[in-house]
Image (cartoon, rainbow, N blue to C red):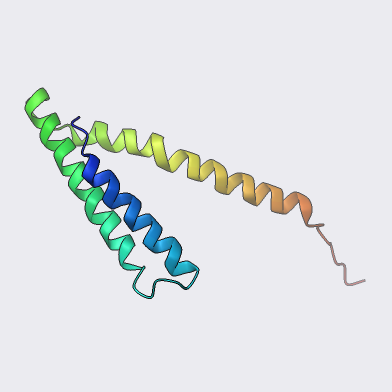
Length: 98
């Protein structure tokens, strides 16, 4: 995939804007999130275009399975470990009304 250096600079600006917004220095820094999402949408669309020309078509099922393995499973593992850690730290009280 062709590397767009200017887009990397725009992504860095978007991230810095969001960080400055959270620290109270950039009142419109939340727009950095929109910019970041637009840039990523552009990069994904160019990737789909490359896949279509190389493979003769885009197999959306394999892309979705890759995304599932790449993103959802680690998040699920992280969430389950957080629940498990919370359950182990919190004592379970059993109340009996006798």
